[in-house]
Image (cartoon, rainbow, N blue to C red; front, side):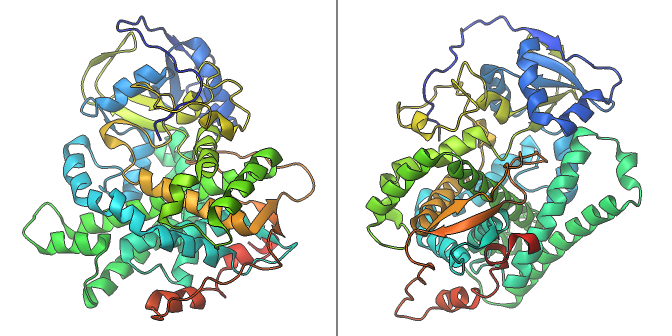
Length: 494
């Protein structure tokens, strides 16, 4: 995922940085309002004011990093720029002290504990399961029917990541509950990040009550899964690894950490990939040439098979390019915060300890100097040049440094398999009329995406062949067909 097409900014060994202040800094809440009302336009306006630009988030004075070299310098120095600031202050009550939100001092131990579940061999072993999840989602789609693609993709990704965490996917009711909770949580998190005034969110408003209820329900779901496992047989999955550590001789792994890690990975492992897939289908429907190339490649590589296997992924070059360009054009993780742990000279400024620093993959991905015509969706830009983007690549959909996303390889494999599987059977079309622009919340991507199903092979997707052994997973797959409301119901009832 480190390849970068076209031109990359060249950083001098000694660079003179320009710092500035975003206009309209008074009243102090003005930038928070701008981020809430027109976030992408506001971000893209900031590089004209400097490489490091001062903004205000409510009463919080913050700095947004606009140059890729400065972003990489920050992400590599995790001891100085620790996870913190408004975003992580809001995430910690939700995710606790898991690998996504833990401080620098805890990160290496936690990452080593979780890393085996996401090693290349384990990811490869999950490829067939990823295809099954994609087939199960689109199994009941019908020609001409309108489906909510966003909900369908959330069902797909939740099913795939739950296999890594819990072996068996969450059952129908719990999958639907996770999806509903996430929709409420991500909206509430964004409002709390850009306007970090706690008193507003203690009020007993309907929105605040919905947010608190969604968080509580997510925690109950994970607690129930842990209790069921402890009462049952051990399994070779991440939950099994965590429980073995908690019940062994490692005092650092507590029951609370087991809970926090599962919540963190369930949310991040389902939300971001589902948004990437939804964005990809929306973009492909508006770019027929890119879609045509995708279908030609999928038909050639799969040769009539319903979904790709592990050996097919290296040959799905254009399919992967579509995913990469989607992550560039519409990165699900579009804005992040850090906080300084000491006084530091950075970007031509002296930042005191406790300073909030932000960076935006979206901003870096839409810089014309790095990506000509950044608003255009051009998967071919990832085919024209190989190699990586060097040490200061502006392409960072999974972050960079030692805290780069733990599951980046899993996410790339999952989205590539899902895109190829669905494109093998269906074209997805926007309904007549203008396409509603995507409005970011704590993540970026369509929250409701009604699209019309147009079959490529017959009226329905053929059911996947069942293994001769009649495994438990085969039974679960067929049993979930009726539930797939996320991909089977009319969009106006989604």
